[in-house]
Length: 97
Image 1: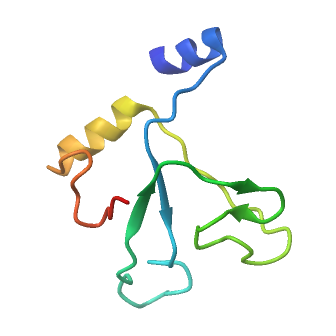
Image 2: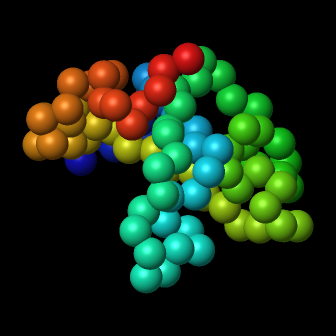
C-alpha cells in the first residue's frame, strides 16, 4: 500500500521496464499447450488510440477491442523474479532488444 500512497501523493509513476509480445502464448489455445512466443523488452512503445500498442500481439486485433495494459510495482516484479529464481532481466523468455 505504501507504493500506491506514494503514487497518489506525487501523482507520478516511473516505468522501469516495457515488454511486448508479438504472438499469443495462451489466447485462443484452449486445451493446447502454451505457444513459444518471446516477450521482448523495448525502450519505448507507441500507444495508438483505438488500435493498441504498436508491435504488441493485440495491435489492430479487432475494431474497438478493449485490450488492457498491466502495470505493477517494481517491488512486485522483484518479488516475482525472486520467487521464480529468475534474474530480473535475464529470463530466457525475455529477448532484450
